[in-house]
Length: 32
Image (cartoon, rainbow, N blue to C red; front, side):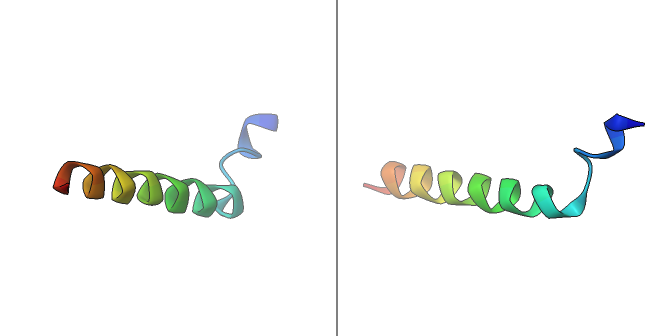
């Protein structure tokens, strides 16, 4: 029952944005 909490869409969005941010920074670093 408690396992359903972490799967909420609210905490999931910030995680994706954070991942994309790190991915973008990594891409910029590789570009340099």
